Image 1 (cartoon, rainbow, N blue to C red):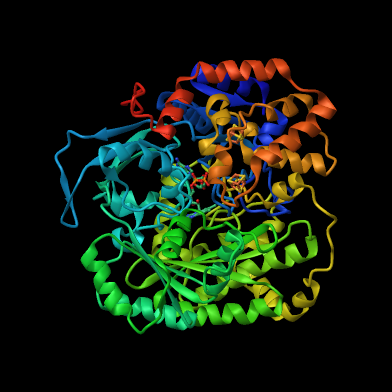
Image 2: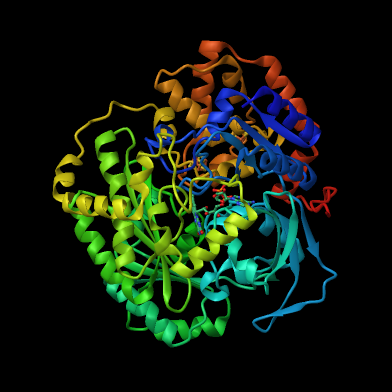
Length: 632
Ligand SMILES: Cc1cc2nc3c(=O)[nH]c(=O)nc-3n(C[C@H](O)[C@H](O)[C@H](O)COP(=O)(O)OP(=O)(O)OC[C@H]3O[C@@H](n4cnc5c(N)ncnc54)[C@H](O)[C@@H]3O)c2cc1C
Ligand code: SF4
Ligand code: SF4
């Protein structure tokens, strides 16, 4: 970026934003959780600058400036999405919104009614994470209605991407749990939009195309009195979905219904190191009222086998760790669709037929998100270090998406990689409304450009042509016909050398970012490089023999070895042991940065945020409670 522009941005930001210019740290902002090896060849994925704004005023100045100068901006939250939604496509600025974290409870507001129940509201800024909200609400005897299984993702991120998750069966899509949104448009104008307004729904699932979500007023519920989960084994996927449909017909009232296939329960056994779960398809439900539970138990009688209570409780707890995998290769590939409930089984049968030809083992789980629809998530474990197999498998993901569309499904996210399916996600009229709205609110196309609506690559757009729906469909047809050949190509051939713990850990990290939320080093330094996922990224570079600078190496040592990251790790990785190994390697090469470590410890000691975090997590009742809420 032009030096003059950079200086002007620095002037606008003042002390109220952190500006990141370092090469390696900017590289950390060039990716999301999807491993797409050719992304860098198609787009300018490394941003020229990264800005972490702390206030709406500063954000406004930056956005206005970007609009005037026609500089692209890419908003991002916790980066737990994987379709390229946060990945830069052209040179520009990444706005890291994860430090816009105010929240305020509107206790004084009169209780309002939601489906006949009273509710209180909570106003939250975009960067607050769902886990933090739930933590904040506990002492207030309040709770969220629905939340994503990526519990550590941000409010803005879930609004912008999906909105279906745990509790969606009972409470519906996220848009029904929000009273109003504050949006900042590319012009810098900030507008409050109420749920009754037609414009409101446009900000859900449109991946930051129209404006930046600044705040949301969430409708809360009273804290759940009881959690009564049950897992029931059934003979097949067909039986499981019949069971679900009958349960819905009988008007049983669970908070949540989830389908898990036998492969999923096999993984749970591997994680636990014991054959505790039966290797069958299963349905997981959660009730909160005793009488509803009794109705369910009566209904289930003779239809399947109920798991023991401790297993049901365990697998319910694991709802927040859907990617915990031990049994296979380290890199997950995923395909997500919302599909009519009655089409789920025929679709899954076809998926099985195609993927078995290619030696792919698909895991299936599905949240039931309404009386007639399911959010299906298919994952396949692969290894990015086996390039041939990985490329074939990654190219089969759109084949499975296309197949789902034929069965009446709709792709869940778009980002970059699902752009050819945009017209399958939005019917024609809505697509036209979105396009017109985009040209009204973002006429200079600075917000998250060249994705969602259409892709433009850096190569005179010749490669972008492959993203055109017609061309893409043709490619998919060819890929489907080629599956028997793919099958031969993808049989595992390469045997890997014995791996060190660090290597195994680094390649098993799925980059979900859950660990960053609880990492005191990140809390205090706000630097991406100190987060567990990015230390593992650096470790991969180191193991691959790539250059690492001493200043980047020094940051790895900013770690208390507290083990909080391990507690929440999606993949249950032995992270503290990995830090010991990594630090040793770096100390051998560059020496230990004793001064930096000393400064880091002092910064932790004097950080209010750190002590608030410690009190909140240890819940010492007799410690002085520092206020967690800051009002706007
Ligand atoms: C283990 C795991 C479980 C998951 N479970 C679920 C689930 O149950 N339900 C579900 O829907 N998804 C799920 N996901 C996908 C992902 O977590 C969600 O899409 C998530 O809520 C995204 O939030 P984020 O903060 O990570 O957003 P990011 O990934 O950082 O951003 C996602 C998109 O939103 C845009 N964006 C971010 N913040 C803003 C903002 N303030 N204003 C405008 N645009 C913005 C970005 O530009 C990008 O396009 C899961 C992912 C993982 C890894
Ligand atoms: S062990 Fe280190 S990386 Fe993990 S949470 Fe603690 S400070 Fe962060
Ligand atoms: S270290 Fe664990 S929690 Fe952190 S990004 Fe990797 S898999 Fe997720």
